[in-house]
Image (cartoon, rainbow, N blue to C red):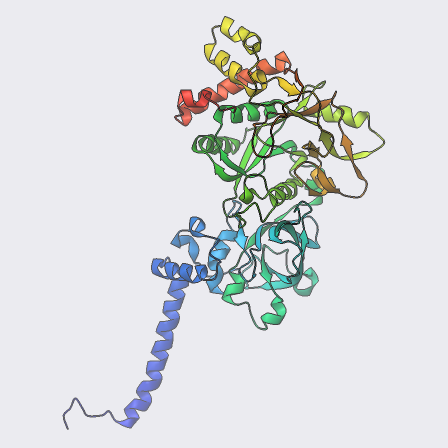
Amino acid sequence: MSPISRRPPWKLLLVALPLCFYLAFELGYSSMYHIFSTNNYHRSLETLKQIKSYVPSYQNFEDDVPVPSQLFNKSSDFPNNSSVYYQSLANQPKQLDWQPVSTSKDKFSVYSAYSYDSEKVIIISTARTNTNESITCVFHYKSDNEIWESTEGRIENMDENWGLNYTGAFVHCRLPSKSAKNLPLPYSVSVIAGDFNKDNDKEPTLPTILGNVLKIKYTSLDDVLDPPFNFSVCVLPAYNYNEVLYFLEWMEYYKLMGVQHFTLYNVSIGPSTSCILRHLMEDSKMNDSQVKVVVHPWKKFPIKSTAEIRASACAECGLSPGGNDCLYRHKGLAKYMSLVDFDEYIVPRTAGNFEEMISFLDAVNTSIKVGEYSFHNGFYPRARANDKFAKNLCEEFRIRKDFFTYKVCKQLMTVKKVARQEELLPYHQRTKYFVRPEAAIEIGNHHVIKLKLGYKTLVTPQEIAFLHHYRKNNAHWTLPDNAVLVPDRMPKNLAVELAKNTARQVDKFIKKCELDFDTVFSQNDK
């Protein structure tokens, strides 16, 4: 027999085999440790493919994929190393976009999580209307140990759903008892369809853990009672919006009225306005900045048809979840919050700003505790001719040879559109409002739906203030042919100050964003 075919002695095999198993174990363990503690790009891509296989096709996470160096680390805050991708998402300081509840049979998705006491978390979501789906809330802890706890959750419809297939919804999650394991408050939460404790006897499986993760925003009672901002404005998710001049006019007006914080949600804001917003957000990060601007992503809302969910022309704008996310986001952030669009101006008639207006309303209504200040809607149709006296109001800029401000002044919406529908609409019909965030449980687009016990709604007399609504004709509203219009001009001192501030901003952003001069001044009012 040749030396090559000769079999090794049995005794040698008995020694070699254990040694081989030992080396294989060591090498395997070493390789596994390397994967989860270094930037292994190929492993990252492989895991991302695995993650995506559990995510419904209507949700795409590619825009949110972190670079490989962010993807893996040695210790995970989650129950298994496969979920470090979602750990990196939860640790991001920015608001994530909509995330699916991947174990749900419907388009059940979640957006944000808030807690204002030590008992529960409220999650902004969208779900099938009147769903009876059971859900579980899985809480994760920011610690060195891989600890998780779960509690039963409950889905509650938001009110303005029109009985359609899908609705904005609140998910109520009871926080785990702290006394059980002497743990701190959970860092984040995942929502899972089904009975988690029944379906997962030992530990969560990859599909259940990777569906979504929401960092919990905690707000203390001290913050709620003494927020850092007095007045804040929130705009529902914006789509196909790129009116540069009107946007800057709108923002400068609310700043003049005392608004210090602006919150927007981006579905499809146009390139010019997006550039301006990026600069405004950067400016608001400065320590001496008096105004803060925040834009949150809203591109992955799962419902795409207006036949399925209560909406305007944009189904994915999600009016109810958008408004209520803003409400809960502002608890502990602002004393008063208003939900308005870019063509809506709450205009005091007797006060110089919002603080004076609210102080007056409170002073003459001492018998009630006001949670909502409602303002009647007055339509200013944009399709009607410009005011022929607008140039007279702006004349002082021409006399001073400030021709740029003179041009801006004549093009301001609030200056050139002064014909108002004579009769203001009654309460609830396209009204807008200021709300005390801590006083409200749920809000709608045009009124507060539910206030806490003890708070009331004050309908503001039109002599004190009302909403100037500079509306285009569209499928949702057309000025009646027999409508009576009356001239109603902005006070001259306010218009002049607004023109100066807006012109300064227009000049600044024409340069910073390299905007076309003619495009900025060619607004479409039809």
